[in-house]
Length: 72
Image (cartoon, one colour):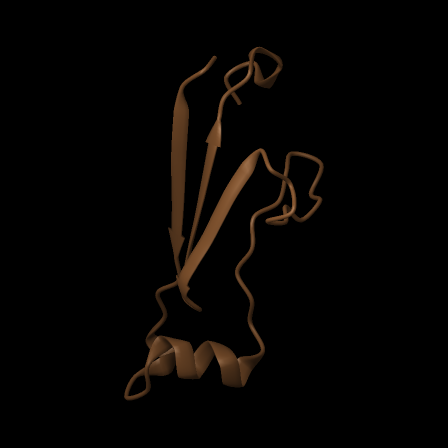
């Protein structure tokens, strides 16, 4: 508890050969986002999480662990 952790997810696909990943993901209507253990989408309005998406094909989540997280 009290430690910060950062998770990063990046989409890789052979489907966008010749196009940029951002162009492909936009044309396919795909969106990357983080969910909690119950499957509820996390939003930047929740001050516990810092979510950044430097591009459409990569997203990071930073949070500080709490005791009640039980190492999950």
